[in-house]
Image (cartoon, rainbow, N blue to C red):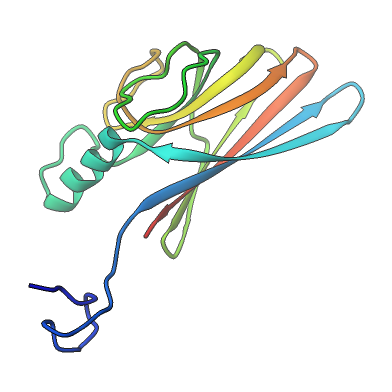
Length: 168
């Protein structure tokens, strides 16, 4: 049996259009040196991990508790293991901060977090978005997205992350 595009109005048995919902994401990292004014912008794709997908499915089913499906924290780490679908935590989380700005446009949700010159200094190799029952404790809550990065942040740098997730 074939399934047509939801809402296509066509014959479900003969329709060749399919509507796939695949969550994806990308991260823009903006490092600003407060002494020199130099700005370094990095764009990376991210992996939407299975735990995050499961949380969204729970939210859609209405079987939610503890703010299921809500992304609340951005974390940075030094772990070098590549992101994998089965990840439930980051490898070596060193800093975590509440998402400060949330926005949505169509099927794209954006989460922004700002780290000061005193926060998250070191060789950053990973970043993640956490939610559900996440707190300011490392690796708490559900990991929704994880990405690999490679940039050193010093006490002269601020860091602004803008994480865009697309559902569809």
